[in-house]
Structures are given as C-alpha cells and as structure tokens.
Image 1: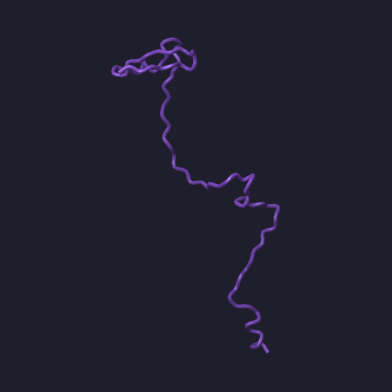
Image 2: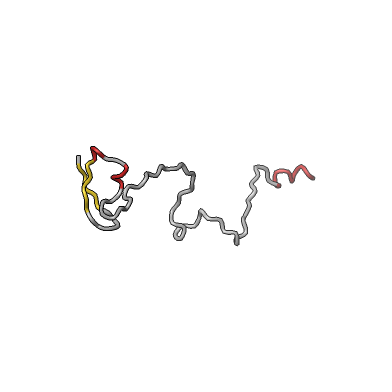
Length: 85
C-alpha cells in the first residue's frame, strides 16, 4: 500500500510504501524534515463551561460590589410578640 505525502517545509510531494514503513521513513526525502508527529493523549480536566463572559457575566464574581447576604428564617419576630408581654 502506497501513500502520498507532502512536506510542509519544502512543499514537495513524495510517496511512501506503508507495507515496509520504518523509522527512517518519518523524514522528508528532499529536506530531511521530520514530518511525523507524536500523538497527544487527552488529559481529564474539570472545568466550568459557560457562555461568552462579555455577553453574560452572571458567572463572574465582582469584588467591587458588596455581596448581599440574605438570612431567611422560618420564625419571624412577629410570632413571639404576644409572648413577651
């Protein structure tokens, strides 16, 4: 099985026989450019995906703004007003 390749460096086309492919065949026969690149394996990453922050910036925390902390309670002060006197 023969495949055709093209070198990015010298812009010349060449053919390689893939049935007898060796490590020396990883180089361009015209300019000796190493045209075979090692494959990259994907790494697992945990991240946050969102829309473009220039359009929708609700995911970002603005340190200039005072954070509003709302404390909600089931019991209100009005519930005990009749017991206090």
